[in-house]
Length: 404
Image (cartoon, rainbow, N blue to C red):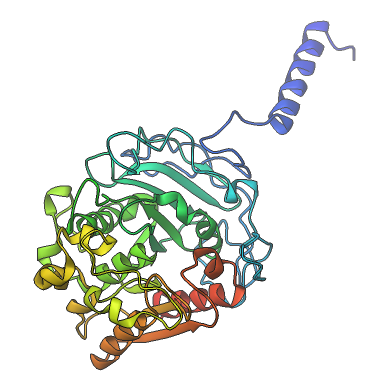
């Protein structure tokens, strides 16, 4: 039977449309390098903005084999995630399978180089996008003010997922949440949500503003756990240098109300975490100069213009009570979470024995502590993250503590 010209034209139009849907790329998302499916299903309103569309695409390979996407939550297994993210310092070892966007700069337009002296303006929330089995929610705000930006990455799947909160270093003077990017995707592909945050720096606020901000971020994440498929009972903190100090401090001060500023929001939520990973953070400021590693020049932590003195607002030896309030070791008690303490044996910035102090204090209270002293390594973020051995130790610790 002959087909009418109008019906034939309609058939051609329909076929062309279907081919375009199959082959045409969607319009750009918040970050370059996004791919593999559309955004996660809508999880409600709030700061994340529009979250429409279907489920994340594909899913990436979990470290224990199998797909991390789709379906329900998968417990991470042994072994490192495949692929390679080139480290520095000539140390071998592959990190997670990283796409081009993983090692790129932080999103343009986020930094505020004005009066906030190195803090980051979160700016308006940007839409999430999927990237190889997880979804990014950049530019969230966990508390009022320009310094309180957060980037959240959530694995594909139903969850709820354990969360790692990453806290950047920079002597409490500088730095921002983009420091975490080389570490985020590895853990997201392993089934962990990862939040990296900014916090008030010492040019604009003295202690306890920094730990108040970290605690506010933990409370915000718990309050929004359902929205972002997080497990509020399985939170870990992780930081490097000054960030390691704050990661330990939020771990030991989970029940210390004096370090909370509940006016920042979500006062009914707990700021406690269930595990801590520390990379070469200071634990007792007053002992740092006395513990200078052999062969290192003194950093003069006792000076009035040292990072530690700038943090507490006084020359540290002249105000021991203020210093004690800022020392993570002050608050150690039997209810503290287990900690993984990693420190370079040749750290000339934060003396290596600082990690030993915390390890001994935790064990004296019956708290689980694993101390790893890395031979030949200094105060070196890249040296830590470029080692497959170090990263595997972190993977194992997180799995052991957050998946008991």
